[in-house]
Length: 379
Ligand SMILES: [Zn+2]
Image (cartoon, rainbow, N blue to C red; front, side, top):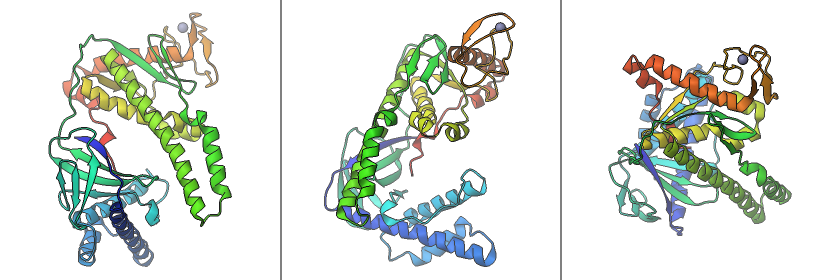
């Protein structure tokens, strides 16, 4: 599976897509209200199948294709399930129509012809900028509206990513992710943290101050909000560009990449904005995806292995604090730089883990995670 994103040309016709999104929001809120009322009356949850059956009856006059409605109900069901399994802190919420940003077409309801998308229920054609050719069978097609009011389509195609050829030299590397330095490689090279949010923080602050000063129902307020969204979008673009480039660079250079299995939720709670700005989790997802293209293996080492506390002689420094950048081993007297030691230990541990599992090929396959969640598209 592979996904491509294209931008729709801006025309007056996109107001019809707005109508569709409004209806989609109505479906979401309606289903949510049903769910809440049912729970209040009977203390039970309406399962997805029953909900779909209910909507089949009442949605026929709608602008939405039946499968699009089903997908919305599945999305709501997923949100509830995440809440039930304690993966989300809160149950799903009611949404405002202007914040509802995407609808998904499964097999039906649209027609694609070159760079023209026809939405059957609207009877309208939308042209998009064909920034790269697509081939293969379209599994799903998502129409998305960005906060700036621009429209994109995301196609998920039934096709393997195009392999990139490289000469495999067997080079391995261990990588330690950090806050001060973005990452430290086991060969001693480092990548500095590009804190895109931090460097543009004055701009963000100015834009949000302007926003809060303007009257909330004015036209002016809307423009101010767009300004803020634009600043944020630039940050996101810069960050993703940096991450993709770094992924390709690493995969060109190395054949086996060993990383930590980060516990990101805990770290974000601890470090907040800075952690989100660095977005290590998103980087790892991208790295795993790019690695499949190059035929490079990415291996996550055991989450509980104390990589920055273990000396080469085997001594484990349990007193090591997060602020200690260097430490001296009391057993053998070696002086360690925390990040470099961690990277080297990750490399060593990774190789050892792979070797111990490689005797049983099926176990090894389970270890090398092949496909990331990168094609999960809906917001
Ligand atoms: Zn030692």
